[in-house]
Length: 261
Image (cartoon, rainbow, N blue to C red; front, side, top):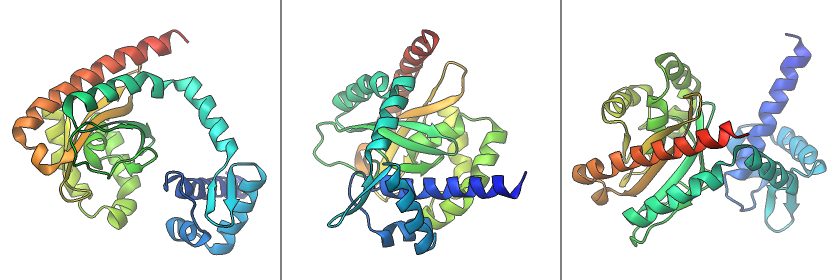
């Protein structure tokens, strides 16, 4: 591979780092210093990338509030949603799970070795966990849905994923290291659903079930999150199979949608 190709790939990676740092604040403006901190890129590099992104309409800047994703990001998102249609297909089961359980329900999409929360619906129970919000990006294996997605992959893919995410998990998720994932994967494969016992934030528990596409590949997950007292063993045994059933029904809808395109 030529050095030009390598440099081009590196520039694309850095650009995506900047966009993800902005997106991670869920519509709030961010400062140049914040983006620099989140990406670990130099200030001149971040400034140069921001200037290029603003020229293309991918980023906007407000003197009072900082940097935001721009209209071109929105337009691309609308086009991508027309291709996948997942938000529309998954919104019904997520809303149903939230209404029936009283807790927060989610659909997250796999993005290579990470998951991105696309949909969140809150149930009626007054105390909620706020760890996972639309746009939140987590390494696979982190959280109930992440555990389910990781466990549904083949062993070689799991090894690649753990290696790819090792540095990030070491820096940001001290309770989600390689040695922590092994028993969770085994448990998920035995039960059919993943259980997060407060590894990300103490007291915030979750259960997730993997969702596959028409080729059997891991596409995403359905999950429920609640405070620890609402996720004890009896309720785990109630919610886990329910999520698996919902995931299977969602897979059937996704297969039908993909086959008609």
